[in-house]
Image (cartoon, rainbow, N blue to C red; front, side, top):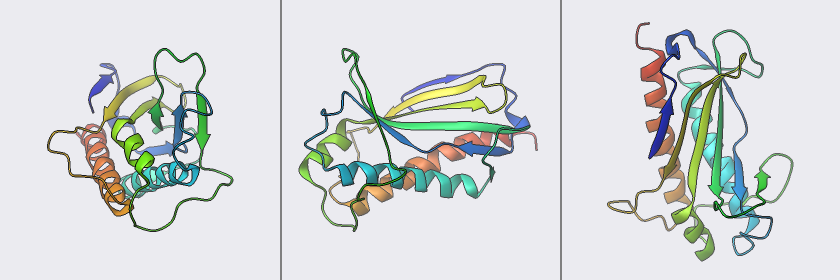
Amino acid sequence: MALVYRNPDAQWTSYDKVLFEPVTLWRSGRHSLDAVPEGDLLRLLTDLEGAVRRRLGAGYELVDEPGPGVIRIRLAITEGRASDPILDVLRAQGGGDVTAGDGALHLETRRFIENAQIEGEIRDARSDGLLAAGVDRRRRKAALPIDTWADVDRALDRWAARVCTRLEARTRTTR
């Protein structure tokens, strides 16, 4: 992650379950991404959520309710700018036609991916205490090109594996 905060008092090894909230997309006003097909934005959300959910499911019990030993993870793909007074939130739940296939990316979708970032936070699901937060963006130097949906899926899988491996290293240290 490019920017990270970790609560120095967090008792990471006390967590073995994850409440993973649906991934959202935060954009600068409802019309800021009009050039990007909405189906592409919905696909980015569902693909990121799927990649992280698969990786978390291999090491944690995924739960739907807060409880003892549960961390809450929230992730968002962001395209907001600090000067924007209004942000619009897009969720993949409940509708919209998601772009299918592994073919070439729409030009505006590729531009969006090159400039977007992923922001996230991890909280104690019962107390809502902040355990960690971070912001990550695609590094252009030495980055593989992302021209197709297959490239996007591979990149999201790599990102999810890297982030979840770091989380596992913290929560499994003394187990």
